[in-house]
Image (cartoon, rainbow, N blue to C red):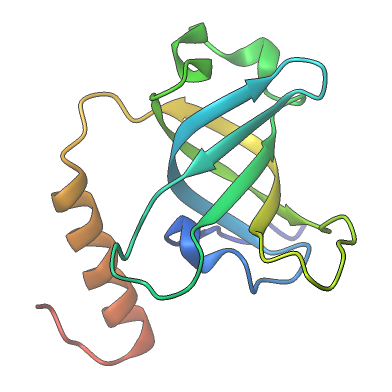
Length: 137
């Protein structure tokens, strides 16, 4: 039996160009929770100096809602870790500048007490190693 593919540890801003079906792991801050659709809107402004519009992730949590240990992860301002699959984006008008990724969560958990700068540095280092550049800034 084949094992499932590993997830890619990425920044939320890296999700937008990925094709549906890509398995990802990322961190985001809850901006809203829409009960009727079972979705979280997540943001993470990294890199903060990016010239492109901020990227958001609309994360469907229907499959994990009953497994959540606390509703704390649904609160605005909570930082959460997500493992899931990129899903197709709804079609938008040509003038729509939103950079919104859509993800079906398979695991969701609180980031707890988080040092965001250390996390960002660690992910940057891991990405550098995986790309073969070896730069550990």
